[in-house]
Image (cartoon, rainbow, N blue to C red):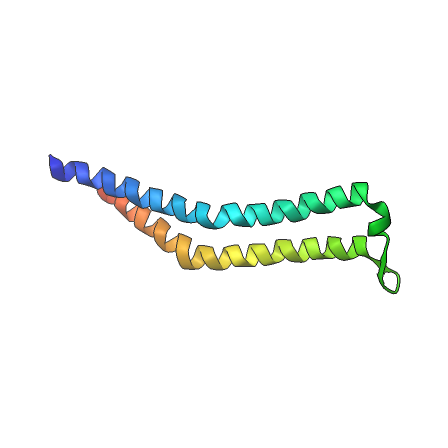
Amino acid sequence: MARDEAHPDAAQAAVQSLVAAKLRFLVPMTIIFMVGYIGLTVISGFAKGLMSVKVVGSLNLGFTLIAFNYVLSWVLALVYERIANKIFDPLASRAAAASRRSAA
């Protein structure tokens, strides 16, 4: 009986480690994105003079920050993809295997 109870516990522990790993990476990445996105929105709404400052030629700070926001989004997506392949996928495979063992 004790052996049957160990399998669900192992599956639950594997899923909990996957969720903990995802939270460890996704919460900071989400905060970085939201600060950039909301910060750009707030600055564009309340500091229009600042956003119209010319950076190079006719390129102003507003367009530069918008471009930076796109770059930030792509960089975060690429970082997530690497982390998912290296960390999340093996943990998910272990969780799925533990779940299959507990169901059997």
